[in-house]
Structures are given as C-alpha cells and as structure tokens.
Image (tube, rainbow over all chains, first blue to last red; front, top):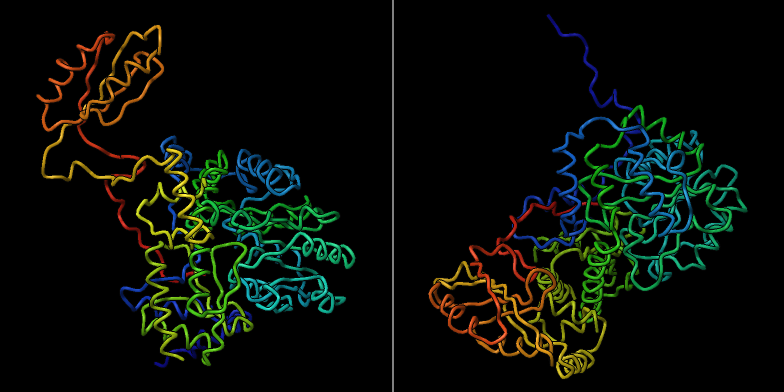
Length: 394
Length: 159
C-alpha cells in the first residue's frame, strides 16, 4: 500500500517564517561552540551574577510558596516599584495600574508593541546596526521595515534630519535603541529633542528600547519619553537584564498610555498569561535598592571600556569610544576582508570570538562587535591576540 | 581619587599603566595620585588576602572583646594604643555596645593566644574584662569569598 501523498513540511510553513533569515549570531555561535579555549568577546550579557540580595529574596519567596500566576499586567507591588523607579530615573510618570505591563524580557515587550500597533503594510522605521530582533519582529507583524543606516562617521547617531526623508503616509512607528547594541553609540539631549519634535510633527508613535540606559558613561542619559509631547506617543521599554545582571531571568516591562498598554496586554494575556512569578519577585527585589548595585557594575564596565578602547587605538584599530552599553564596534574594513571573514579567521587563528558587524544589519559590514563584559585578564589576552592577528593581515 | 582607591581595593597589584588605561588617566597622573594617597596616610599598606585554612601551618585566630575603663585624659585612645602595639594583635576596633574594644589576635597555637590574653592583655591597667572567641573557619575575608564559586557556563556568543 502506498502512503498518502506527503507534502514536505517546508511547504506548509508560514511564508513569513520561511522568509525570515537565520540570525547571523546563530551561525557564528555554531562555529564557536565547536572550539575550545576560546576567549569570547561575543556575548551580549553582563559577566556579573545577579546581586545576592536579589537571589536571596527570590529564594525566600519560593520557600514561602509564592508559585502561582500573577495578574496579567504583573504583580501590583512590582508595577508600583517600576513606576517609582522610572519616574525618578527617566522623568515621566506612569500609573502602575493602567500604564505598566511586565513582560518576559524587553524582547517580548518589543514584540507586543509592534504587534499591537501594526497593520499589514504599515511602515516601521528603525536604525541599523541594531539588535537582531527588530527587523524579524516587524516582518512577523506583516509590517514593512524601513532602515535608517547609521555610521561610525556620525557616531552611529540618529537625527531628525536623517529621519525626515524616510517618513511617508504609511509610517506608523519609529523604533529607537540608545545606548545601542552593537555600536555603544548614544544620543545627545539635542538629538533626542530633535527626534521628538519630528515625531510630534509627523504624529508618529515611538518605541524606545532603553535597556542599556543606566550604562551611559560620559553624559546623562536622556529618554525621549521625557520630551515635551512624547509621553503619550511613546512606548518606553526597559528591563533588568543589563544594568542588574539578570539576563536569564527574562524579565522586562513596557510603559505606555492606557490604551496602548491595554492593547499589548491583550496579546500578552493570550500568549504568555503573565511573566514567571519568581522572575517578577526577583525584579521587585532588584528595585528595592538598585542604585548601589548598578553603580558598582557600571564602574567596572566603565574601566573596561576605557581599557579596551585605548588598547584598540594603540594597536591600530579605528574605534569610536562607546558612550554606553558594554560593546565596542571597531572598524576593520582597512584590512581588506569582510567582517565575517575577519571574525572567522580571528576565531580560527587566535581563538578570539567577536561577532561580525553584519549580524546587526548590512551596514555593520566593516565592523566587529566586541563585548567587554569579560574579565580584565581575558581582555588583555584578547588584545594581544588581536594585535598579532592584524599584524599578520597587513 | 575615589575611583583609584576602588580599583586598588580590588587589585592592589595593578600596574600604573593598566590603572591609567582603565581610569582614563596618564600613568604619571596615577603615580602622583598614588603618592599623594600614601603621603596623606590614606593608603597604609598593600597586602595579599590569604585563605589561612589552606596553609599547611596551623594558625589560631581569636576575636577578643575587651572592656576597659576610659581614662580621664585621652579616653579610650591611650589604652587602645598600648594594646594595639602588640604584634599578636592583627586588627583592633573601638566598638559601640556591650564591650569597648574588639581585637583580632593571631598566634601559632591555642596556648600562645590564651597566654597572651591572660598574661598580657588582662594585666594592662584599665582592662576590666575580656571574652575570647576562637575562629573555626573563614568564609569571607575583606570582601573576598574563600571558596571560589563554581565557574558558571556562559554562552560564548549571544545577541
């Protein structure tokens, strides 16, 4: 008996998913994971463990049996703590009962925000090089990604002047991420003000992913949500992963006007129900006295940024001094090979892993993302090896 | 200045060049700042943090609570300065609460430490009482855990 005709799985998959490219990071990860004794500048997370009082407080809550669902929006005490923290750190005030949604990392919040707002064909402007999930999330929402390419010459800034020509009748959203992964770039208060005025003029909604904001080194971080006329057209995304070393807890939040929060919450309640209760408790513990924890870790990143930047410059790598986050984005185009080739050869010859700039968008070509959230000893060895490697390329 | 001290408290063996790179200063600036701190007596010494429990030779450490009668002239400082000059005393603090001075005393064995307390310490005029507690194990010293945490597997590459 012949089996009934079997259509290959690939032909049954949703076309948006089939067309979704694999993350360049995953490709690279597969190569690195085969190797031993690698010094990795390839991670996107802190090298600290979550501060002890956060872990201890969370364990206590588990001992006490706090293991059930929470409200869809998230624990009231956590939303209240977030409301206070956001107001004193960034300026705008959000009502804990109507304007704050606890999510599974900023990643989920971003997905909810884009899906809550986009109809098929709506245009979403975002800037590259950027975090790997912006474009796929826009595509998955059947919206059209519109890229603003930033460059080293302009310190990877986004300005109103560069945004204006990209705005059309169909532009629905603008996504910003500063301080930026992978470039470490930031925006001045002046830049932010200009973008805000344009958003008001063109009646755009802005999603601002400010996950790295506490790690801003040379000038105060300015949130676009705090600009005149912006609070009610901004979805402010933030979380605990980077500044409080909590990546694995997967906990973040969105602050937005009530109708937007309600729309995001609708998707969240049917897909996620609520963020994990122990992670919410950890976030609550984190917000009890966050300033000291953050300051200590920030100081350590600041030192390593100074060290790695000065070292790169001294071995002849062109490199912007990053304003925030924990990434350096040196230029390697003078060596005459592509970012990917550079990264793979560096890995094979010197066992140093850094991510090719193209993993963060085509205009990342000619760059390498080096994360300095690793020990000083490792950074020193990495610099020696990179120096030897580029010596061989010349 | 505070940043330099914080860096040295983490790693006092750091070179001038490395400290300069990390603090965005020149090596000369670091050297001058360091000298000023030493001259001003802010930095008193550079020492290694040792896990005594891993050493072959046994070493006994006692924490001793000492009650004293403060003097009319000089308060606690005079008597304290007499006690802290004994080399057996490795740390000493004036405390609030039930007793006045807290001493850390080290010796090669129990008997030596006990003798120090009974023969030397108790006989100092003004010392009215002592309570001696022997250290059994060190978990943490000067902010450093004595047991190294298990290395945690971190992804080599992540977005």
